Length: 292
Image (tube, rainbow, N blue to C red; front, side):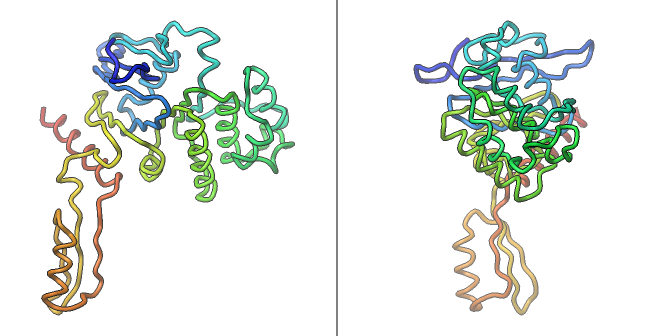
């Protein structure tokens, strides 16, 4: 398998990854790399193949074809030592133990050679006040925070985050974002899936979009989508009514509007968000599939 430029092998390297279930193809020839210290978002609608791809990379599911290496190892053959280098936060947890939160986290920490401080980890995910609460008594949001704590307490080299902030309130989400930034600053490589596009834009260096098992776009967050999808919109109001114009030079248009009629009412320049671009990509490729 070829790697990207530079002497260091990518933390994750995937080439033509394929997974079939009988006649159904869940993943169809997906290829991408994730570099050391990078936060990489894997985006796509439900059923697109994201979870299957991640489960293959985590070593939980066998691939049908293609190649994959995670931390230099084929994930289908990774042993206990390899798995100890991973942190995994699944979409949901079946864990409903009767032990207190801190005891549960300390137990998990004991599995790793260089774990994070248990109390500092509880504080980072906002569970300090629930440290003595039994796991089964936690609310849904608190359970999700415990999932995150269990995923990061071992100081993983590669952290898989599958919809990590589901059930978080806005304040908890912001606190979690700060935690992810601190992990990134420590050198942790992160693979993130999320339906919160603002979260992907805030945390990720690059993103890949999967639709129908195929990779339809990949790149830096500010380059995903076609140039046409990223054209800003200028809106304003004058004596003739409300106006809206898409332009690649919004500053020039604003200057012309002001020069022609003075300060307009309700002037705004709206640049498409990652969510706008993403929805455009999904709609375009869904339509192509329907017409094929």
